[in-house]
Image (cartoon, rainbow, N blue to C red):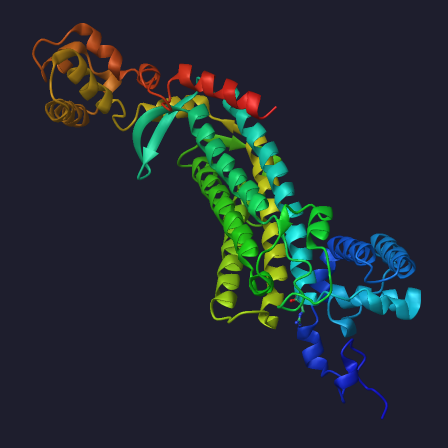
Length: 462
Ligand code: ARG
């Protein structure tokens, strides 16, 4: 009987794969992105088979030459990817047969697609994480640049979106630098512990051939081989770590985008964004909308969705490999592409943003933002407990509110009514700039602190 199934496993199959299954079963459109890693992994595997005398040098060289030819074909867009061969591994294997003939069949000794795919995927995620770290470095540098020019820009700091206490705009920007630094650390720590090579564990048990896993592991840039063959092919933690780090980073970016949208609103008017990062309306001629910021805020949902999807895929899977796991690549690639674009757009946004300094200063004086400073003054100069001082300051706020005055518009006579034995120098606490510069505790918003911090960060991000 003629064999109707063209797959690698066709010998045992009496009918061709159903068309509809071929459509969803084939992952080639997605996993062709792994071709560099897949070919590198195969070359190193072939080298190891030769070294261990499992295949002859002749065959090994022939295989490696063929693989390199395939790599050139793919790089030059001259490779025909076929759904019939399901995934990147089999597409390459089939092509190897057509280039070097039956000797291609020696390459798959002592390995399975199960260990092959995670080796490829781990290598790819390492590369992808390094790219994200690079882009985060650029982003941090742009935040530092914007901070440097805004050390003396005073704005209201918010809690509950109500004016809380005056801060420096630079200090606010440096808060995001801390967030992006943590994101960087997360991706770097993933890279460090992804560093175990699964190649050689076979389908799930290991192999009877005398392979050298230390050799392949080292050659592929891993620290060591994985310890347990079953865990190796079942594990997708490294993909989840990537997706989780991407989600947290996207969440940070989304918070920043949200702030820009609020600050750019006609109600706040705290910043101006360059026209190149705005769009118009098809009906309202006056409009300039912050679409890029809205898009990166919206797209964070895609990053979270990918994480949720893979967690859900994994949660019910017994050990070891199941086809369910094939979906992991689409999720990771999708999250990677989304995040990378979001980081780049955020970088454009921070560069194209100008604070409205007068408005920031004016708003910093709204909402009685120095009331806490007045309370602190009373503790420090009039020996009150903080709770007593708090009450006196609250009374002053009530008075100012009733008389429709800001705290910096009160005169000494009015302030003195709240507390006996007040020195006239109390009046300086109502100056927002003074308020900022009093916050000298480590990590506080005082100009002196910010300058030191920027200096330190500048050295870190040259
Ligand atoms: N394309 C497959 C994947 O990504 C490769 C592993 C296939 N292994 C198997 N036992 N069917 O998961």
